[in-house]
Image (cartoon, rainbow, N blue to C red; front, side, top):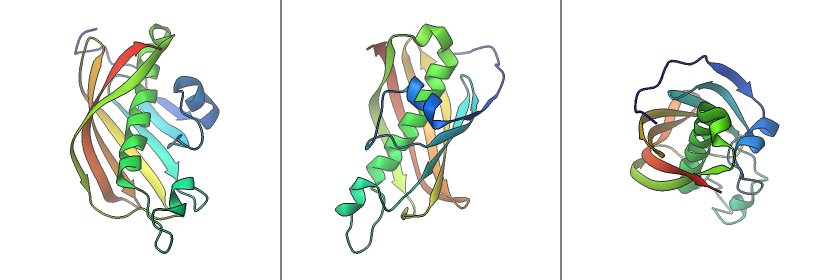
Length: 156
């Protein structure tokens, strides 16, 4: 697979059922609720509606619940996973996207129950089955987190 891909048509509004067809994550570890947009091999925009019913809020933190930063990065990775599977199409059959590394993660603001987090993931490069991304998460157009991360496509 080359680093440069042919431009592909934008795909809009991937619902939760289709998200679950594309990545294996399930409650309580499914960190995205929908994908608003995918431009294959380019970028994806995911949505996470943060609810007080999330299991992690029981211990993080009981008197001041905030979404753990590592789970915000996981939401970025899951958004990227949907983009990769969508980009590869039938070629992704029987494969999983495995998180490999996180670099330069920065957390700018806390994410609270009731927030709607918009996650934007951009492909930086891919060589063979290794992909590198830059992700940002926003709440009400304010940057809450950013990270560079990579993933590998492997047989499941």
